[in-house]
Image (cartoon, rainbow, N blue to C red; front, top):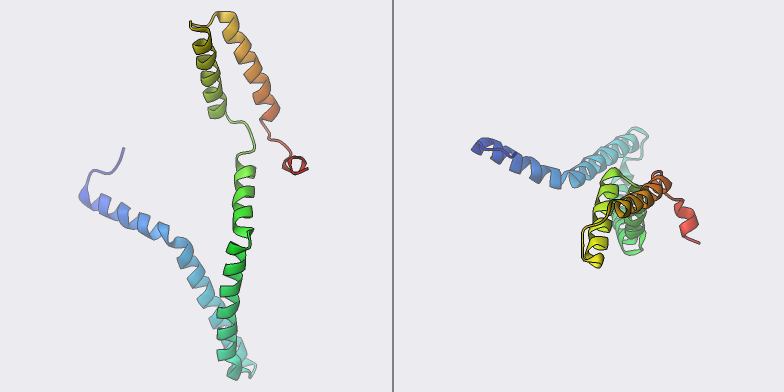
Length: 144
């Protein structure tokens, strides 16, 4: 069910927009906090004259890091590892979908409805595979 009232739809749209840029907001707020804390520390310790240098060096370092992180393959590797690790197990939805696919494919290949023993054979095979992969596989062994 979705919102029906105009003001709820409007609020939801703005919340979605803010959510879309929340990562950038967090990054900006964290950067401002870090820079201001460092500038106060520099001033308090008598090194306030280095503040512009620190701000400039931080901006350059952030740009270099962003470039190397994204263009150097780290971004893609993190995304791949996150996907591998988060999808590295059998779940009930996959188990159900797999049995439905296996049954329908076998029935289509036979050109008829499945007999009870064929359904049980498919179910048994998928139950065994589901149990085997329920907790996932060792991804480090996959790299070899």
